[in-house]
Length: 337
Image 1 (tube, rainbow, N blue to C red):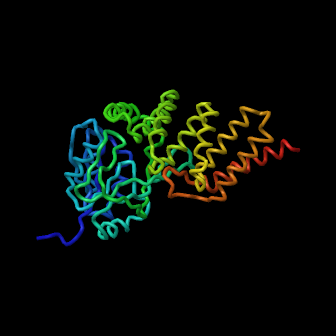
Image 2: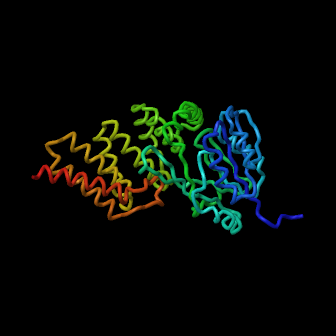
Image 3: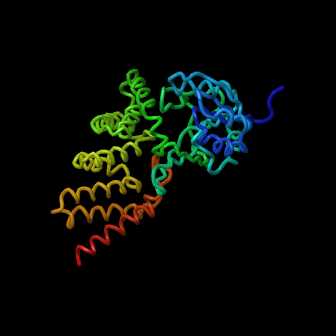
């Protein structure tokens, strides 16, 4: 007998996620029919917690590829629709739209907004990632794996929290991800997205020369229309600034100026760069660099928040820019007194 309802599964691959898996599964359980967990070698209480919360738990030796593991989990789920999550994620809002969205049209992919928490209460980065997929759609790539499908991608009003970028969580993942990225790059040396991820990986590892090289190669290889281009540009300018390569950062910012007239993130990090230039060239600070920095942060407020931009940081179009303006204006007032 043919199915009369849409079968929706939450699909996870996990390993030693006792810290967070209960939060994840509890948040998703009301909105799906099944929860399918593929464990790749946990030695903590991950499996017991998942089973207690009603998940189907399967096992696979770690295959040294996230795509292989995810594809195996998707095959096990064999659902009409799959919501792919990591154990350090949770549904923060919009769960009720999942079933409505899946029932509306079969031939598309859903991209919820991932709210990535980082160190500091004010730092939340927003990314739109393909996570809701129909049966028969699979992944490729050993790490930072991507959905391989020609189906159109549509953003959906589903918010997913993520705290896997906190320092303690990054520390246990960085060596594993690094060698997987290098293995992928050996097979696809001109892949723009891999080059970008290696730039971020080098930044996380504190390898400044490698980071500068990977970011430069990624910028050269990434099409203007690539959905990660905004985040790439912002990260590259920030990285060059923190590396002390202020002239290179300014050259990149100048070259990208016309591309991001409505990005508070662009103008926010431009203000930071201009402030660093003021410190590096105090003779030009008061009459040149500091007024430009002030103007950049004023532009952030004029634009406002733009959560639809990939990699945007919440607050750069509002309170974070206002804070920087308040600080620089008080300093300018003191210098003028």
